[in-house]
Image (cartoon, rainbow, N blue to C red; front, side):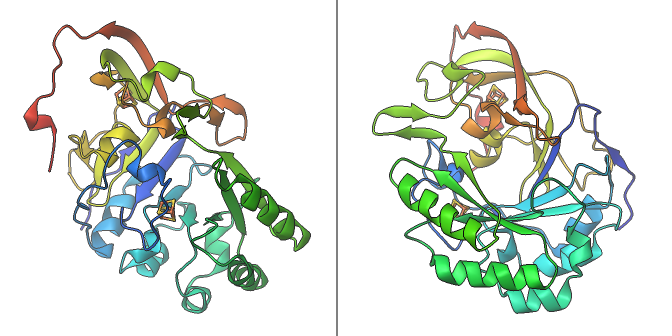
Length: 301
Ligand code: SF4
Ligand code: SF4
């Protein structure tokens, strides 16, 4: 399958490739199910189609394709996709590291996943209560010995914060990079997270606005979404990476879901240069909705 090049707008900062939204762990604080029941998982596409779609992308070398999910290694062609992506496209992976690392080490050249960034290219999420830290550390050290750039991050959810900080201490002493992220969302009636538009989440009252993103968000069937809210809630895609005519837009789009945004989209974070103060989307012209517009045609089951 040969498809014409798809260029990213110059303000884009991130490429998120959700090979699958399925996961073999069920963390109760998972951001993928923020403010919603888990949805039926959308169909995934074959490895060949992923390779054809991703190999169209024209982007700066410091914007890697970040495989994530769910758990990206659950895609049956996970390794084949990594091996067949164009060599000038860099790759990062967000994973819970439950996959068979011996097969991974045998099949993948560690140089394929090392671009000298200021953070590890394979970032493993640690979830106390769902994972054995000792086992996880053994796997990470084995991958490091094989030449891979691997680190851990933990979420400072108030219920598990102390366990995460203890795990961080243990890992750092074992020379394993371990970073922490703030918890995003509500717990015990308190909203956690640092947001550029605080009224955009957990608000019963929806407003209309104009919104544009700096991220290419690609769902499991190669649909492209304007934000994480739309991906997780199965709103209409703005296009599909396998569509011969797709073009990635930098334009503001109308949205009537302001108030129900996903925390990932509006939190203040670091950009790819590790400079703090970046937010995935830019929102303007926020206005009260006179009539709640929720066109059925814009929602997929
Ligand atoms: S491992 Fe990650 S994707 Fe899977 S349920 Fe936990 S937080 Fe969600
Ligand atoms: S306003 Fe919120 S829900 Fe609407 S497109 Fe922007 S981030 Fe997504």
